[in-house]
Image 1: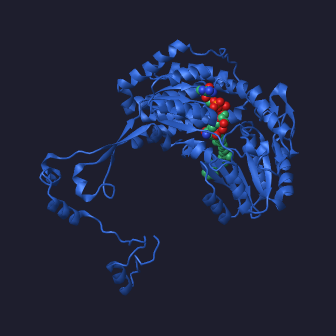
Image 2: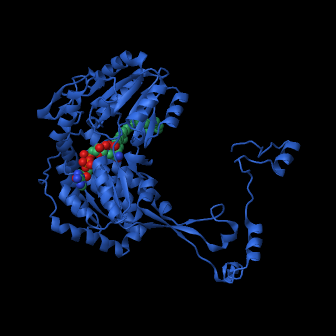
Image 3: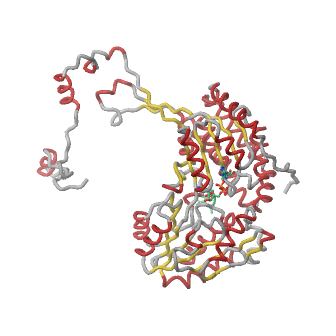
Length: 513
Ligand SMILES: NC(=O)C1=CN([C@@H]2O[C@H](COP(=O)(O)OP(=O)(O)OC[C@H]3O[C@@H](n4cnc5c(N)ncnc54)[C@H](O)[C@@H]3O)[C@@H](O)[C@H]2O)C=CC1
Ligand SMILES: CC1=C(/C=C/C(C)=C/C=C/C(C)=C/C=C/C=C(C)/C=C/C=C(C)/C=C/C=C(\C)C(=O)O)C(C)(C)CCC1
């Protein structure tokens, strides 16, 4: 890897923050960001910045998280470059006005030229977490640029080298009147939160998300929250390939040393499978780390002492049995990929979000029990994984919600940059990625335009009101219900005609739909 020097972490001066926010707001008011050409230039610049800063970003990710170059490219740098390309390829289409026609516009209003105009929401604040310090901060930025917003970014202070590289990269390569990076921790974030934003995009813990949402509510500022969750994986007796399930779940918990909000916190598995599953897990461990996980250059480290201690405490306090891994090394911030067999939902391994390379295995007697346990542990997790028959997987999707879900694999629904990603309930508000990133920072403004020549046609609305005219208009335009007071669809003439002439009956009384 090329030799690079990253300056030491420096927090942005608190008294500079109001001016930074004001510059971004002022830049938005120039309306230059509304031009698609300007947005495309910024996206192209971001693409090349990511390309040119690759050595610095790789070095920073290595120093901050000991993230391997493979992972850094796959899930952060190249991933974002793909994001820029996707937005560039589709921006014209995303940004185009949408004509609203029937059935969205009733026939009687069809002369009013309804359309949806896509407008940037304005100046946005993007606050990032530490685990994917580049991707999770800049992927929302791609959406913000595409939508025509100006933005201030606040990287996580827990990954200080990444924060410094990102600041240099964004401020030197993009339009610095429109995009800025504020570095720091709580005081700096508080100073940012004292500014007025048109939207706040926050990725991080539920605890801090609550603080952000509460503060944003004071000024009725919309927020997107991308939070964590206690994510279940289900394995039933019909699992098509238990060895593969073990291998894929191991992958899910070892990428980024399990510091992935959508990886499984616990595995609910039918009792008969437990012992074999553990054998397969150990086999997958051996295959992935032939010299042991500690020696592997591929396994990242825990970000800092605090998170290391948090994970260690979960292992120390569990009443379960460690069935794989268990080694920890504070000096290296190393936690071995670890599975713990537990038998209580109150066990710390079940009750807390792991956000590390450790997870629990909870044996169940049936899928019914598994669904009860999962709904009890966390009813609205960020993700869910299911390894059962097709029918069982559908049942799991039906009876347990989550932000996103993957069948027969670990969190793959969240590994692709072009499909919407987000939580549900207390695991997150709103979604982004692909077109959803554009939509996230866009105000969908409905515009109507009434032609002057149509006034006599529309004159019924004017005072003095005439009930007779209103009734006539209703008779001409109102759709009659095809259902009765019990909510049942009623047999109409169309049904009998269809039945008699063999065209197939529709609207049979008693139909539920
Ligand atoms: N849904 C998603 O896409 C993701 C969610 N997460 C969640 O994030 C958490 C881990 O990330 P962390 O960086 O530790 O999150 P965090 O919530 O501690 O920090 C996130 C950001 O908030 C700022 N912050 C921290 N404390 C603050 C306070 N009291 N007031 C104002 N700002 C504050 C930090 O400087 C950082 O930029 C996990 O819970 C994980 O599940 C992480 C990655 C993705
Ligand atoms: C099938 C065809 C082809 C071959 C395709 C192949 C070989 C595809 C292989 C794809 C794999 C294994 C991709 C793995 C990707 C993993 C990624 C991108 C992980 C991303 C992780 C992320 C984004 C993490 C986010 C974390 C978050 C949000 C968090 O903390 O919550 C050919 C050969 C291409 C031909 C066509 C057919």
